[in-house]
Length: 165
Image (cartoon, rainbow, N blue to C red; front, side):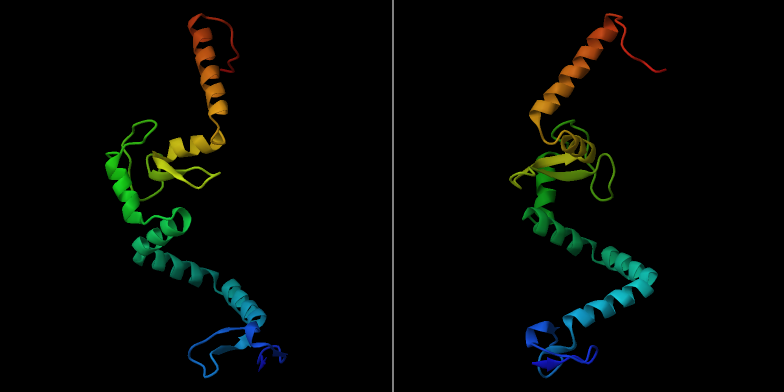
């Protein structure tokens, strides 16, 4: 049991976060008090926090990127780069040259199956977004292809289709 200096209550040790600097190895405030103190600080220092986070991400971009890929996809960022290289930095769908770094239409992104989490390959941002809009469904995608082909035939045959211009 330990006394919280903020709420003045005696609570079990598991109510306190770890702190290796203190002799008992626990924070002086309980987790709920510490959480509210941190929230107060963040609300009063939004710009300072935003600046500090941006600076961290700029300095540690490679570490942040690597952690993101490992946590989300189970691979390192360097493995992602190798995948891009194996595809000769071309999108597997539209064959456009892929770029690395800032988000853009041609930015290389890792495509994965949302149902299984399995990686399918590297696509450009536009193709990956398009697959997502079609709910990763080949049936819906085929219906869209049929629709496009039908409208092209109608245009070529000068059949009336709806135009608003």
